Length: 162
Image (tube, rainbow, N blue to C red; front, side, top):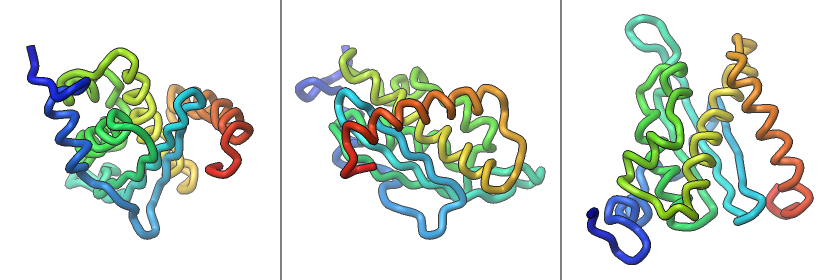
């Protein structure tokens, strides 16, 4: 059994108390903003895109701002760590299971935070691709449309944030 401090394993608490990549990027190449209508968590992920040796777009820098609970902040921190330096296609493969595995464990009631972190990262990549008129993979386009529907609901419930 993993060592817990209350509800959370130590690694979750470490990312909460010492978040990696916290902050805002000045003039980001892409911004992902998502939220959860039930709990009210809101996440922003900002990316700067560069090129690797093969000329592929990579996430050169990534930062986040999260307004939410321990799990929301921790999953955002881990998602940015997993994405930094990765080609965009690889960053899009970071799913909620990978985020939870990297943290060690999340209480079942907090798993939705890992989906939010995954979606915020995907939205940042989508924003970059759309702004630069680059091809958007079909799966990313589909996910973006689902997130947009959720945002409309959030705007109704939390107009002060959206």
